[in-house]
Image (tube, rainbow over all chains, first blue to last red; front, side, top):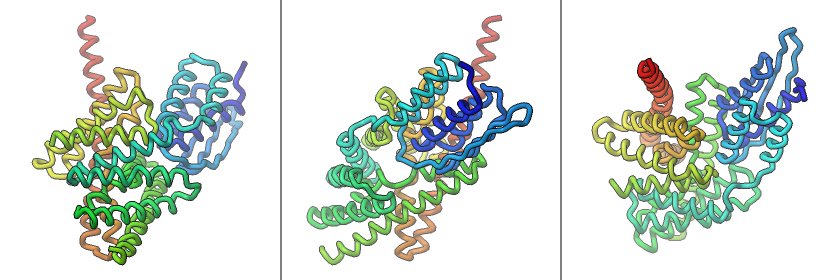
Length: 250
Length: 148
């Protein structure tokens, strides 16, 4: 079956929406979508930001098709990004028909989390423990960091709320528990806090944003940077509030 | 130092699960993270923060590209998990905390650390792409010469 321009555009939207919502970079999305357009003989213009994708296909005679898609940003999911990459390679190397690719893309979009929430919470605790140790905490401080992080991660993942409130609560709950542990067990609470807060700190978003700015993807880079600052402000505001409350408690 | 390198391996693996990295890639990506942290720790005393982060991310970038090419794996999970221990999350947090408590001197000090680390990572990763292309060209030329 021959692919019409509408089909090409639909496939591009499925790829673009999937990669962006799984945390892929704007540069990756633009390269992937341009390769699909090029394979089908179109001059393709793609502009991707973390929340919107603009696609425009232009034929040799000047006729054009375009689409704008609003994207709902989710958390990074490399399993899905890897699957999109594999599907793209299959399509570009003619290993699978475009009809099957579109079916696979629809299926992938409805895929649930790769790992169960309990396992992710446990791993967040393990990561927090390791970070606390790397940043100079002793074994007991690292252990408390892990013990605090896992249940908070689990609790906040179950909450149907917006990202800013979740980050505020993460900063608040982590700090208050860390200060209490520090008080009752005579530990350095800041070493516990810094390990526990790491699963929420947007270090990767900051690095990605500068990487995008270096690639002259100014809109995507600066909007990711703004997002990182907002996350940091929420976390720190939560932590500061907790210090204020804990000061009255201990 | 050995224990901190081991901790960076564990941190990398933990983050890999949080980010839903495919199971087959987790051990390799965690090894890349541990090696990156080892390079960072070795270079820190000699080169200072920004250069040691640059060197570490350069090596992470080259190693990730090499593994991705040889084993036909996606590059992004390897790089992201690899740089997780290096990302300036703690200094960014401290910078914001000091801004909010109006200790501007410390806030700018931590902001400087955050930006020098983040820039070191970015320049290292960008440079690794170029270095890897040069390595590929050399291998290509070498294999052509051998065929003749």
